[in-house]
Image 1 (tube, rainbow, N blue to C red):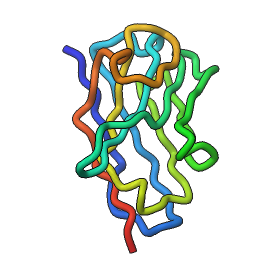
Image 2 (image 1 turned 60 degrees about the vertical axis):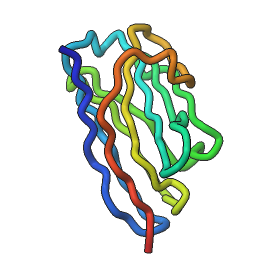
Image 3 (image 1 turned 120 degrees about the vertical axis):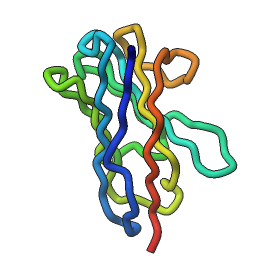
Length: 124
């Protein structure tokens, strides 16, 4: 059974930082492209970032480029999203997703497995 479990969300002030983690099980993690998406209230779920199986390639949405960093530890079956300089518009539920392919992807339909999400709220 595939499980993706996100953690690390919470309430943070504007300008602050958070690190999200996603622990994977039931998949061949070291050969899976991974991604982060987010969904704000009343909006569609949007792409945030993606990383290839080796960590050698990464994609970012324009809105987070330069502030967020995706990384992975294949020995721990975990992908991370370091979020710096957070803004109120970053408030959303953040979802981890896994592919049965090795590369990066920025569209939801290219992902095969999804986590339950973790809430990130940026507010003073």
